[in-house]
Image 1 (cartoon, chains in turn blue, purple):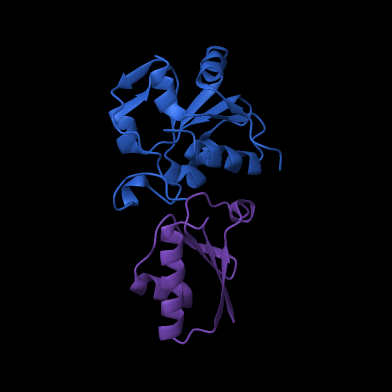
Image 2: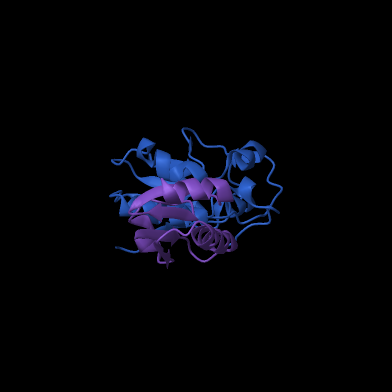
Length: 131
Length: 78
């Protein structure tokens, strides 16, 4: 498989301006706290991603994002495995996006990395990456 | 013999599932071979992203969680 293309938040914002679709794979409770304030952002929680990924159009440039870029990297690899040729991972996630002053709704409080093992809510302490 | 695979990249939950599966297999005298699959490309071949996942005879029977022992018994024997 080809390696995943990764873009920084600046490049992601530029791509969105040019028509790319931003897909946020954070869980619902994370999105409720703070979310990307860009038009048309698609929300598919990581824990549902393997069931719902076909909602993502295969004929558009797609940017996958999460909290810090770990879950989105896995999700991007998953998309590529399923034939999505135009999917890229946004490095450093919404944390770096917010640090750059890019548009965010709400307030980003937690700095957790998330977890690729099912839902973040399923983890006993919610402290972040486990794999 | 059942072919049982535990899909997971090596996190704590994946180990929990592997231990629970082995315990159920032992307690129920299930004739099964258990294999842990940690390679992400091999995991994705099952179209699974949320790990850990349990595969029995090529069928994904749970993913993204560690089922309880009673449910595991059902998943492994059905």
